[in-house]
Length: 479
Image (cartoon, rainbow, N blue to C red; front, top):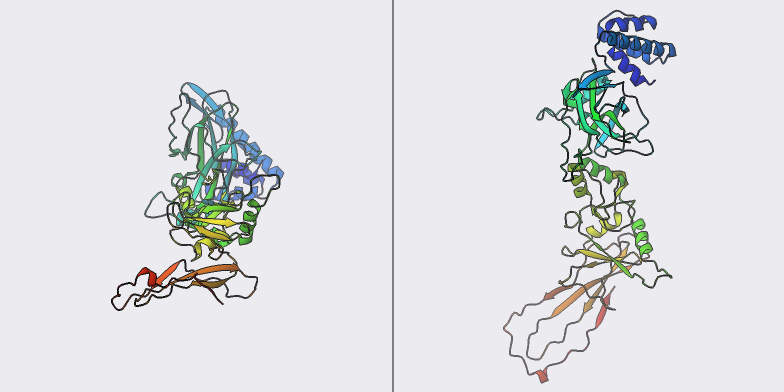
């Protein structure tokens, strides 16, 4: 039998039973009941088999005495539900593991997952468990209370329900017709989700329940949790209780930043792998287009992230994704709809650098990935885009680059006319193998047109035959 079960038994003892146990263990039996309880709990820590057996013996005798008097005891209850009686023993602890909840840090386990296993064939079942707080836990919960909201506790006592299944970690799941009372007070559970299906019972949202407002937040005394439920065919459930600290989406975002961005080379390798030539395929990809807009908010991402367990390149905004799951936790990837874990979310270093680059105009919504890991901006259909030619390309690499300005000469001025002189300057970025620092591109000029305004009125143009026709523009490469 575990220490938690022994503690629960001891906390239910009367003064006479506590005195009997302490005398058996060679401890003083003088003082108030709270003092006797504390000394009895200290005796449990000795892990003496004889003392443990004595606790069970006293507890069993107490149950027999209570049953003979027709009363009720702390762990075994008999109550009437619509003319039917249902008796349930103390809930036994199990090896069930519940999934970690991203928005809660577990500070202590008050009640290990305990089985809600039917003890009879009756329709309604009921079980009871007890726990007590340490002085440190009680202080931490009370001091965290938000005085503006009487029932708001950032550090709180939380109960969770899940399927009685030990093969894997379990999600939260309520039994049918669940009812919870803490110290005799009914707890408000999440409202069931309405359903249009006939004969199907509405399910409660799978989320934990904060029972702090119903608890005795003091190390002196104990708290009792009574759970009622309707058994289901081939399904059993567990209940557990924890002391947790509630987190916000900003807390989770800050933790993602502390982990650091996912390496740029990893994403580059993923791009190259997707564009790798397959000899057995008749279709070969030469580039990939990825949106720089978040699929959730439909606006440009600020903090691009994606799960390491997904194979797609498309990212989504970390802040928006966490805020949405803070309000309604689904933890579904907005790109491929797969269930994901917070621990697998990473900020993508490659796309972070793409979005921070000045080479990506604000009105561009896509980037095209090349097989060498470089990228170039793309715009939505119906708007001007960069033209790629042999001498005029816009290919941007995230590594060190050199700026080479390509200046196209304007046509020569006509006789007797002051012509506006135009200069078109564009930036061509090429890969650099040099290890020298300071070669990153700090700015980009995309088709910048500048013109000199005429300072005097323009004279009439000469006939077309007398105009000097310009030759092909010269290409001047500036080092």
